[in-house]
Amino acid sequence: MQAAAASVPAEDPKRRVLKDVFGFDDFRPGQDQVTEALLAGRHVLAVMPTGAGKSLCYQVPALVLGGLTIVVSPLVALMQDQVAALRLAGVAADTINSSLDRDANVAAWRRVAVGQTRLLYLAPERLMTARMLEALARLDIRLIAVDEAHCISQWGPAFRREYEELSRLRDIFPEVPIIALTATADEATRTDIAAQLFAGRVETLVLGFDRPNIKLGIEPKQDSKRQLLSFVQRHAGRSGIIYCLSRKKTEEMAAFLEKNGVRALAYHAGMSKDAREANQNAFMTLSGVVMVATIAFGMGIDKPDVAYVFHTDLPGSLEAYYQEIGRAGRDGRAAEAHMLFGLGDIRMRRLFIDDEDAPAEHKRRAHGRLDTLIGYCETAQCRRQILLGYFGEHAAPCGNCDNCLDQTPRADGEAEARIILAAIAQTGERFGAAHVVDVLLGHETEKVLARNHHRLASFGTGVAHKKDVWQSLIRQLVAGGFLTLDSGGHGGLAIAEKGRELARGELPFRYRVEVRNRAARGKTRPDAAAGTEDVDTALLATLKAVRLRLARERQVPAFVIFSDRTLIDMAERCPRDLDAFAAVNGVGAAKLREFGEIFLGAIAAHQSRGTA
Image 1 (cartoon, rainbow, N blue to C red):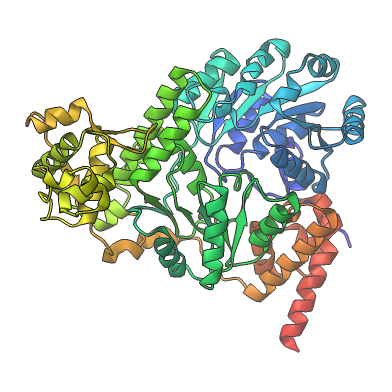
Image 2 (cartoon, rainbow, N blue to C red):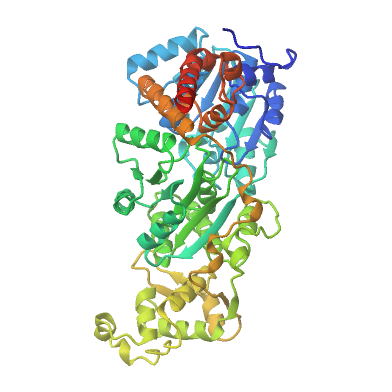
């Protein structure tokens, strides 16, 4: 049985490759424009949201151009997954990296040298060695792709020194078009990438950053385990990703959720490779699995039905936050990005920055980016407006964030601010928020009594408000620049110049009134659930089980066989022969030959059980 030829015009080679190799009928927004520019020999900087299909932007032109394409990638695991996926699609791809033994690397280079390999994945430090560059100069290189290009920019939060050398590529290969790709780059970072990598001569494409189906929400950190469990239980039966700051917390939170009846798995860099892959495959294959992870998890993962991303701790920057929440709701259905936020998070992040082995200017920028993120957390404005504005995109109030849905009230807080400032001044500007609040509430704790702080004029001056109100006020004073945190000590609060002006009545202070258990917390925009599909869930589970078996046999991640999108389309279409199977979104010629009969058999068996 032969599959019917795809109805793609022969005169359009890029669309022929897109259909025959990758199994897609059309490009996603931006992909066609980028591909056309590269085929015309122009350099491109493509800034595309997570999940927008950046890889195809260089993979398709690589196959149209012929010769060899060099792909620069920062992560070994990501390179290996990309190579495995390309090989299953029938594309000759290789990687040479430190995780492979010498024989494997030598064999890969021999395939490259004789012209068998179409795409070669390399880490920047391996590519930019004199020996590698000299060897590549003798080959027919047609295209260079630099993935995660924000790493080259000293203005960005993820700057990596090994990326600096890539600025030499335009001079070493002057006739070769270069594409730089990233999901997170504000205007300053984009300008820096263009200058560093292209000397300003580049065609820049910035797709919209908005993901309107993701509801944005932040709440004060009070009892993080209780808050997490409550949130996860609201999404019972749905897949989600929970980000934690440390490996230890990742394991603790996963065990806590398991104890409370949630199917939760841990993922962090300290686990064995086999354990990480097993948990990743389970997450990709099974429904309703929750992955509790450090930031080691997520890059290259394309699971469309992730219903939420939950941060138990403050991310490193607004760019990191945007990239991490972008792993939710890729199927277009309503999804949530929820974060817990507390003063301890700010102190920890300040410590990370100060302890980093980096120039003072880099640290100054990092503190500035953290200030921006804190401002986002504390704002009473539309969160999506703030987030998109950071990337240079203007938007109206979204109606799908906690501030838009809850209409958080503002109040005049000058009197309360002066009470806080007085307590901080009288205790010597060296104690943390917890001690200051104890003084305000008149709590005779051991620490208060030992330092005679129960004798201060400020002692008991805050009994008009509860503890959580004072904690929120202090956070907002820190976010507003009225107070500073001693990140190098024990989180001690000090009064900034702006705070002294407030104390003298020279500046106003309006604060966001925290309203707990708001009725609107579970609401989403009425149109946010667009794109839901009616799928035979039993058949989809069967197809996922088949995919997992095939992945284990080939020792690759499950999503390399077929993405969830492809399995969903398969379950909807229920193809009965290879012709129909070829029409499934994401089924190219090589995968049709290798997997067609296997999945057709699984579908037929499922249907026969249903009619028995």
